[in-house]
Structure formats: C-alpha cells, structure tokens
Length: 432
Image 1: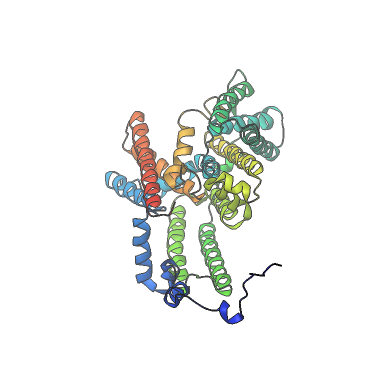
Image 2: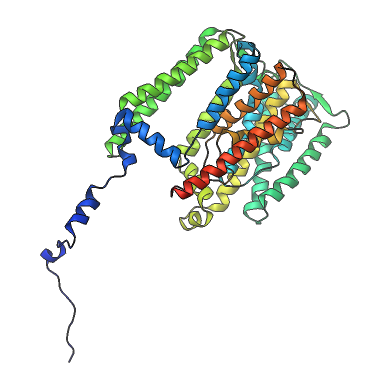
C-alpha cells in the first residue's frame, strides 16, 4: 500500500508572495532608456551621455571629422567649399561609394571581400566589349555586366559558405583571377573608348540643369522622411512601444530639410543636380531599407553577431552568406561602370591602384565595424565623403601623391583604433 505524497495547492496559495517589496520593485522597474523620449531635452542629454560612456559613438566621429576637414581645407583654400568643387566631389565619390556599399554587407558578417576592385574592372571591360566591339545595345551590356558581377560574387560566396574556404583566401584569389580576366578581355590594345553621350558615359556627365529638379528632390526626400517617421511612430504607439514624440520628428525633419535644400542650392550654382548623385542616393535608401526593415536584413545582422545562434534560430546561413557576396559583386560591377564613365573608357588600370583600399576604408571610416554585426549602408556615404574630400583638398594644395596615401592611411588607422576601443568599452558596459 502506497501513500500519495503529491502536494496540492489552492488558488489562494498560488497568489502568495514571499517578498512583496521585491515583487513591487520588479513590476515598477523600467529600463531608463525607454523613458528618454518622455523626458524631453533632458532625457536626450542623459541618453547621449550614457551612449558616450558605453562606447556607442555611432557616426559622431566621422561627422566631426568631416566638419574638421571642411574647416581646415576651406581656411587653406576658399575654393574647397565652392559649388564646383562640392559637385565634383559628390560625382567622383559615387564609383568608390557603390563598391563600398557592397563591402558594408560583407563586413556585417565579419568577413572581407578583396576581389571587389578587380570585379569592378572586369565588369567595365565586359560592358565595353559588348557595347563597343560586339554592338550589343548599351543598356543590355550594362545589365549583363552587373549580372556578371553578382554571379562572380555568388561564386566567391559558394566557395566560402559551402566548401568552407576562408573568405580572405577566396577573394584574394578572385582579385588576381578577375584582374587577369579583365586584361584578357580588353585585348592587346588595353583600352576601349566609350561613347561620352551613351548610357555609361552620361552616368557621371549628365546634370539636371532645371533648378527645380534639385529642389524637388530635396522636398521629396524631406517629405518621405517625415511621413515614414510619423507613420512608424504611430505604429509603435498602437502596440504600446515607446516612440519619438512629434516635436522630435519635426526637429529631425527640419534638420534634414536644411541640409537637403542647402545641397540643392549649391548644385544649382554650378551645373545642376548630378545624375550620379541621384542614383547613389536611391541605392543608399534602398539598401538601408533592405537591412533595417526586412527579415533578410535582420538575418544578416544576426549572422554578424553569432553564426551558431543564427543557425539554431533556423536561419539558412549558407544562403545568406552567398547572397551577401553576390550583393558585393553586383555593387562592385556598378561602381566599375561609374568609374569607367568618369574617364569615358575601360582600360587596364581599372580596378587597380588604391581603389580596393579606398572602398574598404570608406566603409570602415564611415562606422561599419570590422568585427561584424554593426553598420549601415549610409556609412559608405560618410566614409567615401571623407576620403574624396581629403583627396580634393590636398589636390587643391598641390600636395604630392605619397602624402595623400599616408594621410588616408592615418585616417583609416584612427578609425580602426576607435572601433576597437569602443568595442572594449561596450563589452565593459555589457553592451557587446
């Protein structure tokens, strides 16, 4: 005969609280970061101090760097902030900037793609041969070249994600292979001149001369930002999630409006709104949406944080890795087309020199972490602005080429050191 020792509880027993004080504290304790927007200016000031102590610098260093660059070079030469120089900078940066956008995706995984410069040269060679030598319609040649770049990137991703080869080794081999492919494609002459009035030629030479174009674009960008921010806040309020107050959204919109309309005014003082800049902004907005507003973007960030955790969460790690390298190759191809447009030809120097280092440096200087898991495609814009601004500023002062390399290297090293220090600070603060 056995005795049933199973304890029984009554409904009253289930509600007994052994430590009422602790329970009350657990209910009322609120993460102070959730109250920031409800405390007004004081809350934002406190949040800013907290982020600085925790090493969450964001884009602050590069923005301060840009301001310092502008002040220094403008004081040395009043032509630095002229409408023509600013227009030239924003057109020149697009080729390298496009390549850097693709690099951001790879860096978010904590990996590297050393082949992008060679892929950009190979893509420009493919487009030139098809359009000039083979008589293929130029728009089709452009599509084929970009598709070829994406396919090349996907092939690199296959060797890395499926076969397990290190991305560094795979893309280093790609750097050499596609450089040789470009030279072979261009043939003995080594140069194929492009029609300056054709599709590729006008990528960097076409300007919207109507002054309304720049102002309309500024108004559209500002309006879209306000609408998306406002609707996003309404959705957050509807589900009980802390959101920005309306005055905060208005303040941010006003700041964006000042910057946008100032840029529009500056463009209209020279040739007008550059087509290259418009295309670059469109891709920046699209890729930022892809990374921050879609499940695919969340998967990319998840892989950058922890591959094993992502795999256990059901993410197809192999597919995401291959797709990221395909994106990198596609943007490298687009960057190569803009660089070819700048000189109206595809030649043997395409994809060589300091292009690779500048593309990687732009992403890192802009704020994308080399350790993965942190960054935005807008970092490519900020970083390439820093690099090209330094180059143009030194060119105005007739500084020798070796000094340009050394200064760019110093900026890159400083950025990497800041990134390393902030990660240590975040780890100490329990934020990494």
